[in-house]
Length: 320
Image (tube, rainbow, N blue to C red; front, side, top):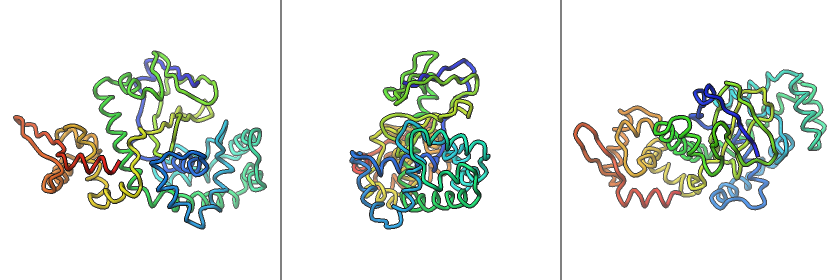
């Protein structure tokens, strides 16, 4: 079990990532490729990527750095990843040699290192450059073609957690993460593969929802790094690739997110918050959805309430 120790300052500094982190998805997608019992919702993705002949070569490199456990190096998932793939790769290329040496030696205690892994541990520039190129190529095959599907699912998860935060504050957000984790003030108890304690010491906690993460959340190994917890999104939010891509292709990523975010009824302002876009943009998208018969709009005083029609609900349930 992982026990995360909060103070009042930590609760005030809890944050929720607003976008997909490509490096955590890269790590967990590789785990799904090696999963002996992959979830049914990801099987279309698995079938598609396994047909890519180039993937195997890149996957071997990623696999050497990201075993299932109990450890993989933190430098492979830099915080700059939330700024995009390029920013994260630049951070990896700039990893200090002392840190590379320490983390690769830690990895070597539990997993065999290939020859290039020892050169990486010494900070050899050419090896670091080759690693960055390999990560980019792996991402282009395993992640990028499915980015709209991933973005839509994570956006729906973020919208859900925002509602928990708005309704119950930081503690409401943490309570809403059950049963993956349990908020027992001042502890957040997380089902985990190793037993450890993480003391936040006023630094707060960054929560990152992940599309490919499964079963248990994962924290950075080094307790001195900014506290981060990556957790799997609700399994029902995983859209099967063939259906979800068709839905996104039909509606567009933002419009599909708006339709999913209505979630039993929402005003234009609420939809703008849930879909992370402007009210003007929501109005344009809801007009198209209404004209297509997927939603109905009702006015209550000065508020405008949007609800899904039976056709809209059928379309969403078929895409999930």
